[in-house]
Structure formats: structure tokens, C-alpha cells
Image (tube, rainbow, N blue to C red; front, side):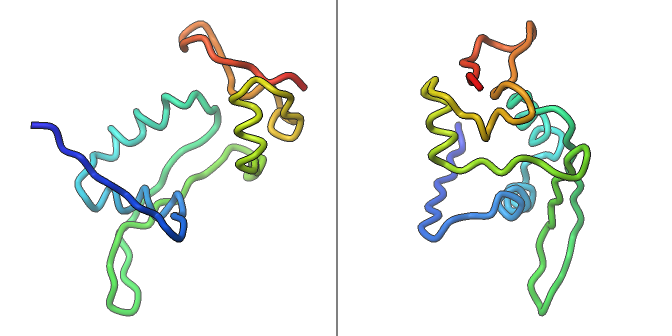
Length: 111
């Protein structure tokens, strides 16, 4: 029987907190890293640890990016990029999304 998780982030959701919640729900860290690896984004790793603050406990996930910085891309820029329109800010460090022989064909940004 398939399991389904419905998330309704009416006020938004921080990615690191959502990843921590998935780990707390029982998703294996290896599986989470495998799925995120499917995004074909180079130079990242996850660290996780159990934390407790003011009586609340959970899993803190930290996403480390090679070089310590990453480009911040807005939703409108991402949408334009996915639609095949120009996305200079998203492509500042190279074509986005990356594509190689091992991944399925993807649209590439034009800078």
C-alpha cells in the first residue's frame, strides 16, 4: 500500500525544516540524499543532528554548499528558466539546470 503525505504550507516552509521533518517521519537519510541527487546540482552535502530547544525536539538539517555560497534564485526567475526564457541571474555560474549524459534531457538557460 502506498503512503501519501499531504503538505499544506499556507505560510511557507523552510527547506531545511521540511527535510528535518521528513527524516523525523522515518524517511531514510540515504533515500533523501538519493532523491535530492536527482536534481543534478553539484557541490552539496547534508548534515543532520537531533536537537532540543525549549522543550521541542527535532532533526536539524544543514545543507552545505561547496564554496559556502549559492545563487539565490527567485520564483519568477525559476519559472522563466523552466519555460525556456532567458534567466541570466540563475545562470550566473553556468547553465541551469545542468545537463550531462547521465541525466535525462533538460531545458537549458540562455544567458
